[in-house]
Length: 151
Ligand SMILES: [Zn+2]
Image (cartoon, rainbow, N blue to C red; front, side, top):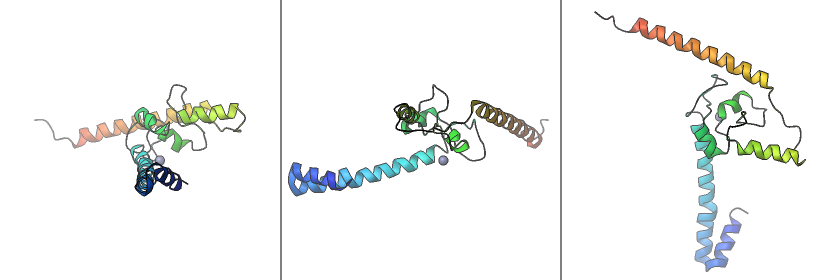
């Protein structure tokens, strides 16, 4: 369907040349762009941003990436709490997918939305903050020990 429809529309518009254009641009190019965007998201969301919920993997939270990915940019949360339907867990975080799923649940089209309790999220954030603070102090001590002595 994703190849046939643009090809048929192209044929209807401009004969066999239109069919070829519809197939290449509306079919093949669309799939290529979609695949590259998907892979870019998974690559960039493991490179750009902060790690407020977990440092076990390279996943990161980024508002910028969330804008381009309809909320998937809050990837660090997604990796730590994979069963939660939300990615941007804070009310102000840009996550249209979360809002769509929530709206569908209010319309009765989706049910049993799974959420991580707020207390579990807060305690995880506090644990990661402590860990990052300790790692920061250790790095500072190592830098001090290995730096050449001032004479
Ligand atoms: Zn990931």
